[in-house]
Length: 112
Image (tube, rainbow, N blue to C red; front, top):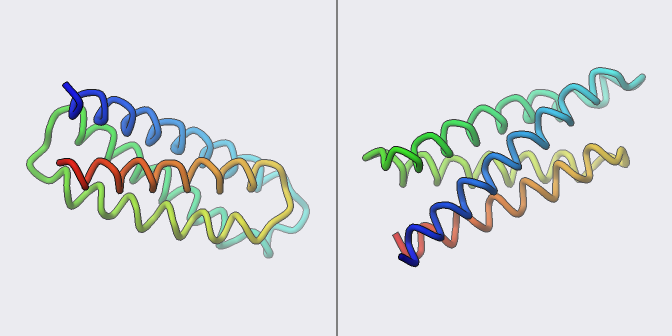
């Protein structure tokens, strides 16, 4: 039962991160300093895609869940670091969601 609850919480964290990354991506494209946000925009897309994949893998108990979740942690931490460099609210919110997702994924791997 504990594992099921942890999976559910981690899936929710991944989906929240995916949504935050998508919002940040779209919002960054509307900013004036596009060149400064290039890496942020790129990582937002990558992170949203990987978080979506991780949520799907966890939902269906994929045999590759561990590897996908490990990749999710890496991408989330990279995205959080990049978004953390910017002062926009959408970047700050994305960075926070990425850190939460990475932590939830780490905790899941500890019990899985």
